[in-house]
Length: 113
Image 1 (tube, rainbow, N blue to C red):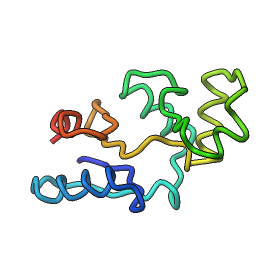
Image 2: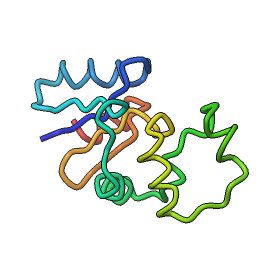
Image 3: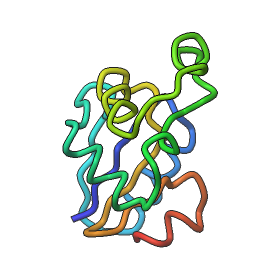
């Protein structure tokens, strides 16, 4: 089963959702701003992406610039920050089995469809 962590106000996320719909694959949509991923889920996503937690942070967000830009946090602390402030999570994230991608490009999306 494919899961997309989706934000409907994001153009890239809407494009990824449309491509998933066209693919005919079964998938689940999680609006992560309303259904915030748990700490455990965030750790699993980061592991499947093969990145450090900070790499999943949207550094262009006003909240990041205002409150977190100058902070040097541990991996666990960044996970906690994302859990408490899901607007800071990159989007869209698509998970399929042991693979996850930040589907901001067609090439990344193709890795999971």
